[in-house]
Length: 443
Image (spheres, rainbow, N blue to C red):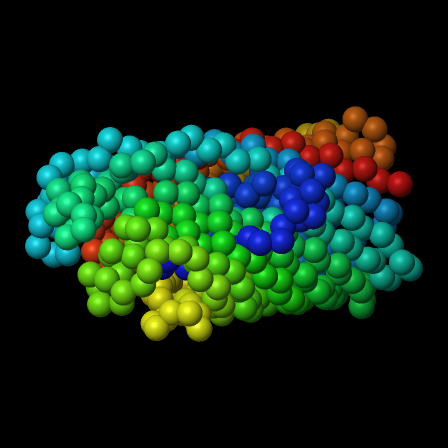
């Protein structure tokens, strides 16, 4: 059961949310970002590796990074970004693992990863209410993961056959077989032009989370809703330098769902001194998704070229542990996270070629939430570097088309976990490619 806990929550009454997600093209995938964040909200911002995203007002999608950017938009506008992600993930098994700290590894399981190529879409709207006030609305998927493993992956062990034991075991199966976590966040915002140089913005967030997390021992299904807030400001120090600051609050969930123990899960629980019968049990768990702080800068190097900088801090340390409480169980299954806070540093440039075409470049360095001893098979994470490029075109006075590409280099990620009895020891190798297209239309 503890495998689910790494991601958070799960699905029960999700039919209407699946319909909404399909309508706007929202599909969570392996994040390739810190924790299980999804970084694909804006194609125009991705082109410069998200540098300056919280101070520019290129289109309505910048409101996600800072609601104050809405104040610089002077006409009604909607923007629809779409991203296609290709993730290449491999796992190389070490050859010295042990089961229950005693039984030596007997080889490597035949399984690895099934290919999952997620598609992520968002929707943004900006509507000026007056000369100094603008309303905004965003519908995005800020957190998610979709990973499928083949059966029999990771370190292999020959254990005593049932009923005295579990029989043949591959460690990876007990840490994760499938992870499917999706969120939808609806964020109305309001921005105010306080002075010619200072804009303020504030927003409310309603977020729905569904998850279905499965391994060889347990399956967790559940869902919940949470509310949060975000605020920001932009400040133009002079004609050539702009600064932005934005904060997005944490989200507190009390997940209600079911945990199902398989025969193997029941046997493993008995071996650990917490006997439980196979079957499903209702339970609840509190979990907190992280707050974030974003700093942005845009500086004019010339009439056509801007230097862009960005720093984003995410408080993943708030995800310390998940304790599941169920009146039907004599123990509280617990997953220890102990994740680290992360920072993403971004450097980018934006150059106006001819007044209707813009090109963008960027690079970003992002920390990992996890280390060797707490790496998650549900959402494996490591330090990563983004290299991006993009362009914007204006085929008509009231329309802009943005395209972008990113390659994400992910450091090899060692894992050494023993908390489920079967030692999972090896190295993840990951990288990803992302392409995006975005249409913005003004009325």
